[in-house]
Structure formats: structure tokens, C-alpha cells
Amino acid sequence: MTYAETIARAADSILPHQGIDPESVARMRLQNRFRTGLDIARYTAKIMREDMATYDADPAAYTQSLGCWHGFIGQQKVIAIKKHFGSTRGRYLYLSGWMVAALRSQFGPLPDQSMHEKTSVSDLIEELYTFLKQADARELGLLFRDLDAARGAGNAVEAARIGHAIDNFETHVVPIIADIDAGFGNAEATYLLARRFIEAGACCIQIENQVSDEKQCGHQDGKVTVPHEDFLAKIRAVRYAFMELGVDDGVIVARTDSLGAGLTKQIAYSTVPGDIGDQYNGFLDCEEVTAVGHGEVLISRSGKVMRPRRLPSNLFQFRPGTGEDRCVLDCITSLQNGADLLWIETEKPHIAQIAGMVDRVRAVIPNAKLVYNNSPSFNWTLNFRQQVFDAWQEDGKDLSAYDRARLMSVDYDATELAAEADERIRTFQKDTAARAGIFHHLITLPTYHTAALSTDNLARDYFGEQGMLGYVKGVQREEIRQGIACVRHQNMSGSDIGDDHKEYFAGEAALKAGGAANTMNQFAA
Image (tube, rainbow, N blue to C red; front, side, top):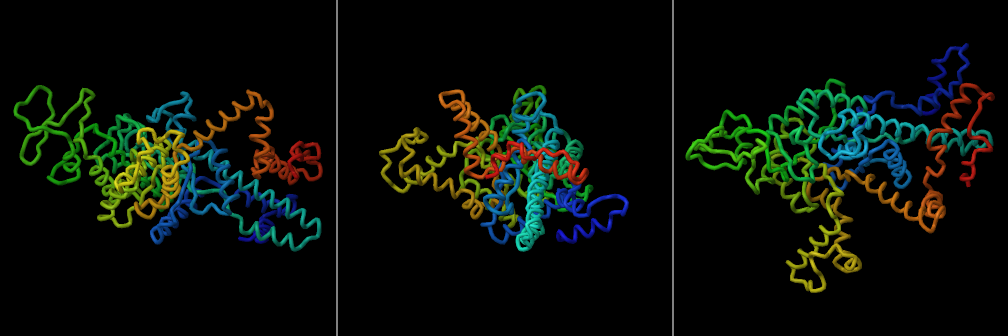
């Protein structure tokens, strides 16, 4: 619907005695396009499905996101994307349970072990979309003001140009991939929390196959997985939540932590040799029984009675070296039972390792696609320098100038090896999208680290010799030079939107904040 049509529709709904301006109503409606979280979930699910189909046709069309821990951070990220690239197409937000635990819990900073309040994640989804909708209202508000100025100047050409921009306005509302950890309880608890996620606007929910009350960060030790049937029940619970709320094309990401998980909470239920429970139990580290001791747990395997290796924690141990096989089985089973995308948590960013597992999955499910965690838990510089070192060693190149154990040293930053490693890092996402079936690349915790780095730099300069120049030169002047909209922080916070509303409501009697005495006018040039 065009801007003119929106005004006409508003006019049709206003009674003569109400004293309401149709164009003002139309503007407010355009600024609040999404009325509910479910409106957002349905809109963004459609975007993700279209992007998945586009990737299937052309793996160069992979998608990306950055993790955000506050609505303002997500808002500024999407504003920056529109500013630098003109469109948000293929660019999402990621909501990391790690950052919610570390930064948003009322208990204070927590490790990534599902100890934070479960609704804090759905609250953050709602907060992110509140800020993204406000970004829409702000940008459209600026266009409306420009339109009024063009009309006032009698510039019909400029007014038509701005009208066209309003008609073709692209929203800041983008898909969010939301981390539900291991579901925060049983399948019913997973369903209830998934409902909250979806009602807040999430079109995509990521769930992992760890034990809910033993959950660990994917890049830490001590991970414990559950049998497939337990995990599939939670996948179905999420799907039922999507279907119940009318988000029929909602997206489920099934994450497997099996590559780094050496333990299971329980032995899977099995009735027939070769069923999914039997396959899971086949990875257990067992020894044949010659004598039965007190309190032992025994299973049968190929006609033999076996004793699974059980730890004092009452957890059972998998055979070493079975991680990749378990990951492949996890992936195939998840896709065959309702998941749309996969997430394989790896210990390093290595294309051959990822592709090797994906090839095995795609032998069964040809269109299998991954979401991949470009994790800050990897030392990217060291990993890729060592990968180049190993490749050069295999090719017989002279490596006498390099010490593999010291490749992180600044001494190597200007070397040929470091340059090749950086080039591999630069093309990693493109290369793995083409070779390893990665549809979506994300960084889980980038804004955690950028907040720490920028704060450290400001503290160093401001509290040191530079004093106020540390802020002016390092922050404000850079905001001005780079065109960062937040330099006019009153406008970003919604002050001009409020002034517009005051004028709608009170006309010339409105007491507005954006007058001549507003110091933000110093940044108008």
C-alpha cells in the first residue's frame, strides 16, 4: 500500500467530529507496521524460508548474523547494515544464551549452564524488536519531516522523491535466531518457553541435544548428551508451538554437541537391534561381562552381555573417537524428524572437518544445511596460521623462519604465512558456504567483546593523559566523521518522534524539545 493509499484509508476511518488529521494517522500506522510479536514471527519466517531456498539454488547466497545482548545493540547493528549496504537482505540477529547468562540475569554474571531465568531470553527477543520498530519509526519520521520541508518549499520533485522513498521503505525488522539452550526442562517446559519466544517475535529457535540440567557451553568440557528420542520430543514440542500460534513455516535449528561430548545421562531405550536407541547405545564404552558385581548396569550387544563404563556421577561414557559418527547420526535423525537446519558445534574452524561430516549427512539428506558458530572461543589467528603452517609443511615449503607453537606472536604479523592465514579467515564464510553446506554464519558473542574493547580504549585515554580529548577524538569526532546517527543521541532515543506526536495531539500549543535551544542542533551540519 502506498503512502497516499494509507492516508486515504485513514481518512475513511475518521469521524468528522474527532478532529484527527488523516495524514498524521497514516504516519503513525506506517511507523508501527508490526502490531504483535506474532506478526513479526510470521513475516520473518517467510524471509528465512525464502533465503533458504535461494541458498539451495546458489550457495554464494549464504546469510549472516551477529549476536546481540541488548535491544540498542541490535538496533544499531541493523541501522549500520542499512547505512553501509542499503538493504538488510540476508542479515539477521542472533540471540545467544551465553550472553543472556553473562549479561542479563538477575543473579549477575553466570556461565553458560542454563542457570539464568528462562524467560529472560524471550524478554530480550521482545526488547530487540521494540528497538528495531523504534528504528523504523525514527527513520520514517525523518522522511516525513523532509517531505514537509519539500512541500513547504514548493519543491514538487523533491516531495515526489521522498514519497517514493516512503513507499519503498525497508523495515529494520529482521529474523532472529534465538537460543533456547536444551529447552530448560522436559518437552512440556520446552513447548511453553518456545511459545514465549514465538509470541515475542522469534521465527527461528535453536535447540541443543545436551541434558538440560547438565548443560555446558559448547566450547567447554563436561558436556552430556541425551538419547535421540528425548531430543526429538523437544524438537516436536517446538514445532507444535509454531503450529499452534500460526507460524507454520517457523524454523528449527537442531544443534549437536556430540563432537565434544563424551558422556550420556542415560542408556537409550531399545526394543529391536538397529533401532535408534540401539544405535545410540552402540557408541557406549563397554566391556564384556565375566562376573556381575553389585549395583551394575548391563546391556546386551550382539548376543553378549556388556557393562557400560559408568562414572561416579552416574553418567555413562562413550567410546573415544566416536564424536563425528554420533554427530552425523544426530544430524540425520533431527532432519528426518522435524528440524530444518543443523548446527554442529566444533572445537576449531576447519573446513575439511565440517565438510567431511556434512558430506555424510547429505548422502542421506541432499539439501541438509548448517548454521555455523564462528565462535570467539576459537583463537582464529592461531588456528589459521597453524593450518597454513601444516599445509606448507605438507607441500615441502621451507618453514625454518617459523615456530609453530609461537605463531600467535606479533613477530609473525607481517609475514607471508600470516597474510595467507588472514586471507583464509576472510574467505572462510564464503568457502564453507560453498563446500560445507553452511547456510548461515553467525558470531555468538561479538558485541560482548566489542563492548569490552571500546570501553578499555576509552578508559585508557580518558583517565590518562588525553583527558576529554580521549572521548572527543576517539568517540565523538569519529561518530561525526563516520556518519554514526547516534551522535545525535536525543533523536536516536525518540525525542523527535515524541515532538511529532505532541504536534499531532496539541497542534501549535505543543511544547516540543527540538527547538532552537536544543544542543543537538550543533550536530546538524
